[in-house]
Image (cartoon, rainbow, N blue to C red; front, side):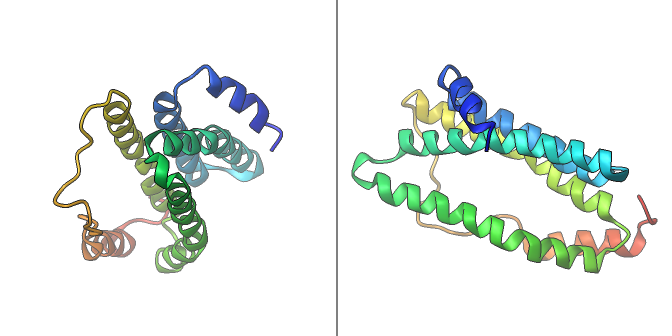
Length: 171
């Protein structure tokens, strides 16, 4: 919480289209560090890196939501952004605990998979915010009402199960 004021000051001179991808990359590094951490010092470094990413990400994503929202629906936009974030925070321990139960010797793999999402998020944030900030078209497929994720859950489960059953402990 003490880092919020300096972060907001820093972000006032930096555009959120740079802060969001940067924070996503730093968070990805932090999550990977959790899996690689050895002892309390390694865990503390990983948590510090993740915390720094969150301190930058939080005000930047609220600012981005304000900029891209329809002024008549800004409240709904903030509500939807907060709801999505809350769902992630609420379900992460449940999903993570399930993965650890399923793959007890694969903690490095689990955290590395989470870390790999950082660059993916960074690219998505950069492309979307660049298009929106330049007043260019933001790509919406179909009528914009679809809610389908184009990653098949069965494929993810099969990959994690294969890694758990055929991987070596600690790999």
